[in-house]
Every structure is written in structure tokens, then in C-alpha cells.
Amino acid sequence: MQVRILLVEDDERIRQALGLALGDEGFDVEDASSGEQALRRLDNEAFDVVLLDLGLPGVDGLEVCRTLRSRGDLPIIVVTARADAQDVIAGLEAGADDYVTKPLMASVLAARIRALLRRRGPGRAGDTLRIGDIEIRTQEGLVHRAGAEVHLTRTEFRLLVELAGAAGRIVSREQLLQRVWGYDYFGDTRLLDVHIRRLRRKIEPNPDDPAVVLTVRGAGYRIHT
Image (tube, rainbow, N blue to C red; front, side, top):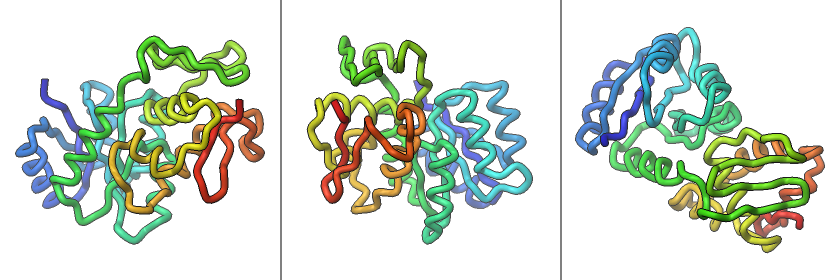
């Protein structure tokens, strides 16, 4: 079955060119020219991935991203200006799974989409991992803390599984980027840093003083067991 993408972009030239290029890559691409139109389509249609420009008129991309994330874990890739670090961080904090920068290369974007879809499923089948009062059911893609379900995005879940599966050993940033996102970010660790912050907000008693997901300065992260 073809992967169905909603491309949300207000620039008609980019929308048309990218839609055709992604179509040539084998994707079924639909589009929306505004945040309002995107939300209406997503209310009534099923998509596998949303490709979301942040600089939209009216309801901007950040608000669309927050709204979609509040509804569930539909994979979201945000599009941002090449040099704007704040856009990257804002998009990821709003709940995006990944980001790409303009100008876009369709082949690179297609690789990002495929990598994102490959990590949508649960972790190692049949495993139940425990960290203190946190239970991770990898086959079902569920996390409970003190008996209450914790709602993670699929990317956050995969990140937690990788850390918990290391049984307290240090996992380097490079290893996490490769295992969770599936490709090399060439030293750009903003993606990982923001997802670690998001994960801590959901599973830590005090995210500002983490006791579960620990930073090992200069080395990576590890789970406190």
C-alpha cells in the first residue's frame, strides 16, 4: 500500500514541485496550503505522515503541530529555514518527530520519510522492561508509571526502549541517533536533545533534576537502574 503524505505548504511552487518529486519517489501526496485546511483534511482523511511547513499564514505550523500531537502520534516532519536554530527547536518542542531544512532535496526527504516510517512500530517483540516503577511493554508499545499509562509518541517510545534495553550502560548520542532515527546527523544533536527533554517531562518525577534518564557528560545518556 502506498504511503500517504499530507504536504502542508503555502508556497504554491514548492508545493507543486515537491508533490511531483515525492510522487516520483513512490508516495501518494496530497496537499494543503494553510494550517486550517490541513486540520480540516486531517479531521476527515487518514494519512501516514505529515510534512509541515512552519511558516504558514493564519494558524501557523507550530500550532498545527501541537494540535496534531494532542490528538495522537501521527508522524510529523517539520520544514524550517536552513539557518534558523530556533525554528528547529520550536518545531521539535511542539511535538515533531523530525525536521528538514529548506531548500529541500526530494531524495533526502524521501529517505527521512522512510526512516521515520520504519521506526513506527513497537520495540523488541515479547519484552517487558522495568525501570523502578516504570514498565515498558515493547510488543504493545505501552508505558506505565506507577500503574498509570504514560502517553509517548512513537519516537519517544523507541528512544526509551533503546535506553532501557541498555540496562544502565551508556548509550552514545551517535548510537541513539542511528538506532532511533536511522541515519547520521553529522554532529547536529538538537533532535536528540529536544526528544530527551520531552521524554523526561513525561516519565521523570522532576524533569529539571532527572533521576531516570541521566546525562553522562561528553559520552551520552544512560538509564538509572
